[in-house]
Image 1: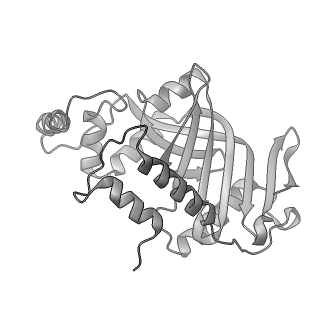
Image 2: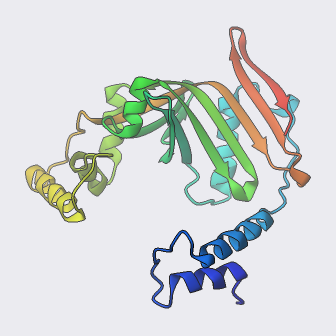
Length: 249
């Protein structure tokens, strides 16, 4: 396969070792790579196409509509269909985003699990509102979800924790998520200590780990279409129930 100009230029900067090397701010190759990569990025992005999406054809309940789209993604055998981007805001008003796994969807909302002492948890304690984005690129579909955050009941967290692989349970107990850690070796030593402490018994869920539920007040369905004239259907929770309309692409 023929290398692109960006690949060639980047290879020169990287050197024959394949390891990145620090470039001077005045290094002319840095400008070459940046310019070539920018031009290539301009050309990326396939045309979208999909079944037309109209508010009148959508389920009156956006959570039911989300489940339908999720079922289609599962049936299409897409990888990690329950991966969603979670966006939060910290006590300084600064946003942060990361990918988490959606573990439950019911009439109350969308559930994910994490460490209650992690950065995302601190953000949610400061501002108990968040946004989720699911993106199923092969289907040219995206769902945006916004709303308030609440912790799930302890029994729900216990049940899910008990269903996890043992390695994931041990890791959740041992890892001080989002805290600086001196080395990988130290992390592995912490894991080994938890393994020894629990023996062969099933570990109990630690108090610092559990679930959150995003209770939606806005859900938007996005269906990619030709020439970027995408279909967007927005649901808003009003006193009388969910209302939906079309948004311009």
